Image 1 (tube, rainbow, N blue to C red):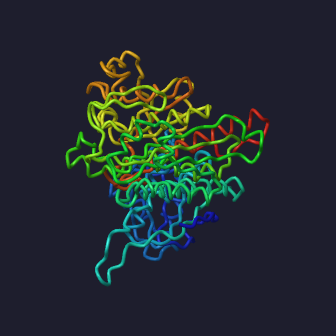
Image 2: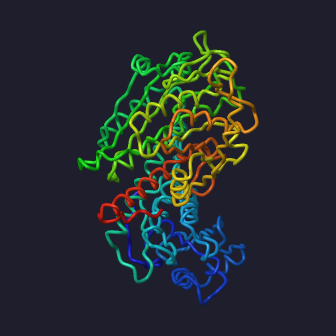
Image 3: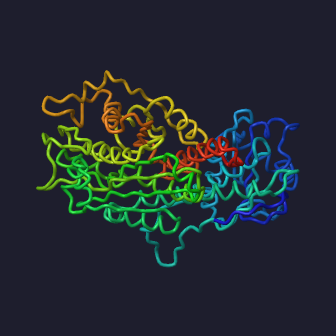
Length: 521
């Protein structure tokens, strides 16, 4: 999708679909009515607002109204999308409204859009949010669908004109905001593709190949370790999970280093993504219905890889390192067993009570390895527990960690429009992981099991500031909603980008360098 900034004249802008994002007051208060809405309605002889009243469109969030213009304005159709109350406007409401507009465009086979957003709020951030919502909303995973002879697949949106409010002019700041929104959306859609692909396609080797391709395209250092190297690194938990599969494990590292020598020596931000490319449960086999979506158990790694695409282009003034332990968890004559005792990279021993609690085993070794480089902050993203979904549902991720580390991540998630809720990390719950024969068990009792998993991971990060994000729920959308389509969401990627942007701003200010204009989101 190509985005351009256009002068505001909604009635004369040629497009298959003109989108007007409106507040509730635009429909109820003539004195506060959006000037663009009033102009379009006037050219349509009052039909737009009359139809809105008849159809019950009140400008509320998640409401939409589509109308054919019959040539009375340059656009073929006009779409009203509601933003709710102006006083409560958030950037996520704009993303969702723009996503609904993109999906409506698909339904009417529109190839071009003109977007007229609100004049309220910060224009650069508004445009970035709209770009993200439109590009994310236009996404669909259809590469395996076939069409009947003569049938055409729905077209993609090819170009979008972003109409500026009255009195506003194009500027470098606006261009940069739009470009950033596009980078984030493109990376998110790339990650969604990766998660939506079958597990027979996205193997550990494929993840490693994609990491190397990203490194080559965006100037990142990439190192991929195979089984022998992983053995030398004493990653006994990681190797145990991988041993039941014919697919070999891969330990993947990506590194961004600033060009400035002094900046390159700063402590890094380390990102760790769970990369189980298929999770059968191992010998503690999952039920068939629960196994269908287990190709998505590498969604954390996909988000981290996608984030590194953007981070490399942002060029923050500190290093960023990404780590993924990629393997399959499969049952076979070689598979690890309940009752096995594993030795981790740190030397801690772990009694296996459930081979379906494999993610924390791999992550434990990878977190310990990442921690060897003494990062300033360590963040892991993982589709780790069904228990987190029971607690928080489909749309909210759980977060664990100490105050100093968690708070900026929560703030980054809020700016990114990704909902994250902090959960407790009570040491009293560690009793559930006590073992009679080893230092600890990999799986405790049912109660508080999402907390148990976080406590297990904490054993491998020492005193490093650390945040664990359990994205089991929001990594997949159960339905089309706003800019989301049923399937993979790329959740976590935008939060990581926002966190790096904010940290870059803080480092720049400490160094008396010009601030990054895109710290909002």
